[in-house]
Length: 233
Image (cartoon, rainbow, N blue to C red; front, side, top):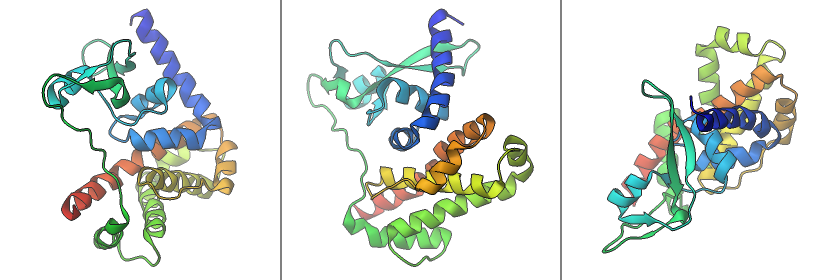
């Protein structure tokens, strides 16, 4: 690997450790960058934690007819999909401006109050009916997704978290997943402090597993949510 690639590889590892002390802030960024891998989320958080929509220069130019503003710095991500590891760069929408001709608007999906009822019905169809409002449903679904994973990967999880109770770890993951989804949906999200305290006490190996899982689960939820939003707008 090149020296630059080595640098960003080290930055990824350092950020994975640092976010254990900046947990809600990382979840806010990861919630917006849910299409990116866990490794990419860490690097985006390290370089531009306030980013809202990232894409390569090629996508901004060809798909949106937007150009990169002069002087903008790209966000370096590690691409290890080929025979050799290299860096690729993405840019936040704030680093772009309309090109010549008609530029495509950048429309980020959002959840409005009129979506609550149809989204609740869709979630009930997918995960079972729940009492309460949309926030309560998201909280319950987060716990369900977490428990399904743990029940299917019990031995692997126990090996990764030998120094904490499985229940504490489940609670920390479920609370993190719920926070991330609520944050992306624009709903009130307050990190459960009891779970956060449990999380901070986890050993390093368990902490890294928690970071990875908390960034992974919301992706399954958003996919179905976006389909429902498209059907109601």
